[in-house]
Structure formats: C-alpha cells, structure tokens
Image (tube, rainbow, N blue to C red):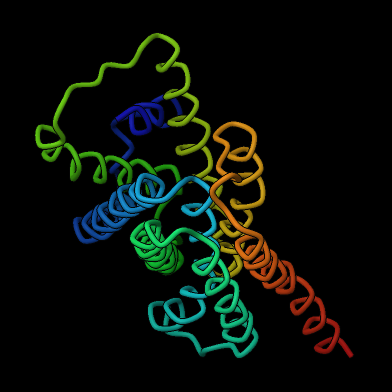
Length: 252
C-alpha cells in the first residue's frame, strides 16, 4: 500500500491509467500478482532458513532467466547465457550441502522465488515499451497489494508498527521498492532480462555482509556455503567479460 501511495507524489492520479487499454492493465496487474508471490516466497525462504540463504537463492535468477526469457520474449537462446547460468549449478549444490538439512525447505522456496523473478522480469521486458515505467510500477504494486490483502485475516495475531518501524517501512516502500522497481523497468528498455537480473545476483554480496553483522547468520553457515557463493559470483561477473569479448569480436 505504501509503495502504491508513494507513486501518487510523482504521477497525477488521473493519468496513472490514461491511454492504457484494458488488456495492458490486466497484463501488468497479472505481473503484479507474480511480484506478490515473489515477495511471499522470498520472505518465506528467510523465515524457513535465514537471510543469507534467502539472498543466495536469488543469485540463481540469471540461470532461470537464461531459459525463461527466450521463451517469453521469443528470441533465440544464447549459449553464453546458458553456460553462465549452468555454471551456477555447482554453486547451488555447495550451498545446499553447506547448510543444516532443516534449511532445505527454505532453499526450495527461495529457488521458487528466483524463478518468479525471472518470469515477471521477462514479461516486463516484453511489455515495458507499451507504458511509462512509473505507471507500470503503480499497477503492478497495487495489484500485488490487492492480491495479498484478503489473506491478512488468516495470518494470526495482530501487528501494528511502532513509530520507528514506520520509518523503516517507509524506507523499504519508497526507496527499496518503488524507486528501485522504477529504475529496474527503465533499465529493461536497454538491457535484456538476463542482463538486468544479474544485478539481482549482487544482492548476496551486500545482503550476506549485512546479515553477518546484524543477524549473526554466519554462525549457521559452513565454508562450502561461501565457496558456492563464490562460484555464483564468478558467473555473475564473468558475464560482463563475455559481453566485452563478444563486442570486441564483432568489431574486429
């Protein structure tokens, strides 16, 4: 709700849906539902395992994107993307092997969350040229909020944020969700979904760093977890090298 309301400060309410056909609105609303399912599975993975495991699962997004994006945007498969995506698999195996078996459900849910990211990013790539990123963000986040709202009474218990919690929620809503989603959609106008999702793979770098100091997650993780993380990051940064090599080869 906060994310949707924050957009009203940037776009006039009467123009949010202007010039958009019913089909376009329904498409973006459907993508908003996928975004909502991603939210649930991502935080579910953190709940079932821990923050570090949830974040590193997101690093598999590029692997899923290398398969999903060509099918959705109807472009050829690229061997460079498939190989770099496959390079992540040993890293995943090491990560799974390096955590307590009780965290396995969290890993499975985290991988599902990464797949959902690959799906909605690929669809956004396909339709991002049809509307302004601000309006797309508003429709998707509003639809996601509406989709999740009916489930609130079944969560059990009540929660009302303390004054300081509102401050953190506003940062999460405006800066970490609305603003970043807008920039991500702008980037999709120039980049492929695979390339854009590589930025998602950087989340474990600063996420695990913060979890180490704030949540003491490192106490629950083994060296093989960090080795797997290293392999995934090599694949992430290796993509930039492959792109430069292909560009030089094309100019030669």
